[in-house]
Length: 211
Image (cartoon, rainbow, N blue to C red; front, side):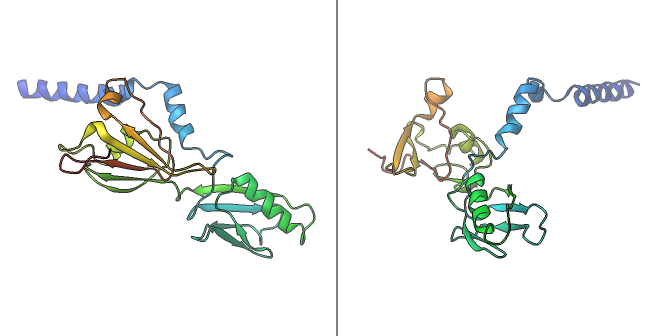
């Protein structure tokens, strides 16, 4: 009989868990969930990169509409107009470029572009972490989140000398950003948001530390 009672108690506990949700999810508000979804949306300011998949639609012309993959040389190919540079442009800029080229063949063409798959945004993690390598940057990601995705810090990681190597943009010089991981955890440091192309280097105690 006692086993039957225990079985009923376990069943009730599971039922409550399913209905109310796990503890870690109960603290999430509707605004938090909305913010998470917003982070995955490609905005008009998104810069197209190699291997991105684009859906290009020309109104009332199915022959010119198609899905294309941005080639490593940064271009896409379309009927009539041939190659068009896509890398480094926003969807609006690429739409305008395609529209201008189509005007030689079609009066007042209406072009729409949707980024179907983001394949060009990556960051890299090297050094004393669980798993080094290239990782997709599909949403807003902080340094702490990136290290978690890389399997966390290794026991011999030098937590106070983490470095982010950041590519130069708009004629700016490349940067080295030094990070103290423990200060971030304690609330005294800046949990930096990563940018495409960032390389995180976590030195180990056996390596020569950067100056």
